[in-house]
Image 1 (cartoon, rainbow, N blue to C red):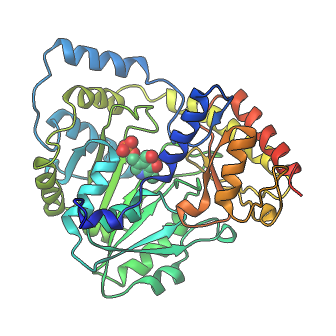
Image 2 (spheres, rainbow, N blue to C red):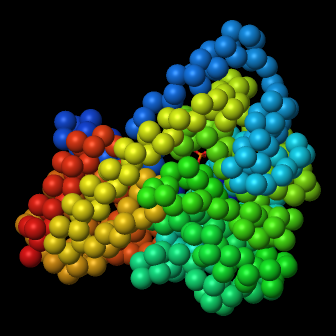
Image 3 (cartoon, rainbow, N blue to C red):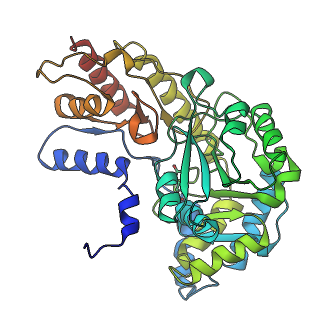
Amino acid sequence: MSFLAAALDRVKPSATIAVTDKARVLKAAGRNVIGLGAGEPDFDTPDNIKQAAIKAIQDGKTKYTAVDGIPELKEAIIGKFQRENGLAYKPNQVIVGVGGKQVLYNALMATINPGDQVIIPAPYWVSYPEMVALAGGEPVPVVCTAAHGFKLQPEALEKAITPKTKWLILCSPSNPTGAAYTKAELKALTEVLVKHPHVWIMTDDMYEHLVYDDFVFTTPAQVEPSLYDRTLTVNGVSKAYCMTGWRIGYAGGPAQLIKAMATIQSQSTSNPCSIAQWAAVEALNGPQSFIPANNKVFKERRDLVVSMLNQANGIECPRPEGAFYVYPSCAGTIGKTAPSGKVIDNDEAFVTELLETEGVAVVQGSAFGLGPAFRISYATKTSDLEDACKRIQRFCGNLR
Ligand code: PLP
């Protein structure tokens, strides 16, 4: 019998971290590798946020805090939800965690009983099904094709709901596709949910600010206020504020659920880092003007990558609404042979051969629940992106 817990048999390690690690090993061995696997902005944390953290250290804000977050950060979060999403929360309806990841994890741990089902539109962020499985639940992926903009259709949602459904997890703009739901698209989904009062909505709004071409972001509890009492609205400072390493995420939702999440947090990590919390207060309350400036760069990169990938043989790349990912199909390359003699028989073979021959690290779509495709993160220097896309064009051109 293994010493390890049986729960581990249900969980896969992260494919995105695996690719990043593989690229790091090749780089250390002296190879010229461009990593397009990691999901974090290449921009530095804005200086006013760093200064707030330095001040917090100097002011001695270095002790344990309330498990669910300092009152000042909760107030900043309440202000953000009201200002940007039209959502009113009280302090006991808000929790701060060690990144959005811990908030999502705690919410699942606090609610899932064995056999509970969680509907997860695919392609999905790799952690959702694994977290559900770890909590003892059953992930129910629902494939959303490129033909539907990688978005869950109301009929597909209706069909996936069973008496055992506990949650629907929505992520818009999406990691890994960049797809974002318009208000009308969200409304069509919330109309289905209104008919099924036992289903709760966990909305992961982590990429809220990263939308392009005048796209207007909305979130389920805003679109359908009658769902407010069964919606957990998750967000964080990692992506828009370039604070991935600071580890601050948060959520607003029903007080009873938030309290249960805080109980789990109190017996695991306790409070998120006190200094990072003060930095997040500044992020949410301070100047926001760097966000559109960064978005201008992201949009240019998206357009560059989409255009260059669509010129590669066998690749089709949709232009997504937001986040910093594109999710091209590589269906046109499957069955072809690389100059090394390797046959590209699926998307994992595609990304492995691409990394080995051209030194470009991307993540296979099958890891996100829909292939043959791959995910590119364009949160990387523009010159590197251009170089990487040229290498992908050459790689695809050399397949026979
Ligand atoms: N949700 C999505 C869709 C993400 O892509 C990520 C990070 O990659 C997270 C949540 C977690 O973010 P955090 O860094 O705040 O834990």
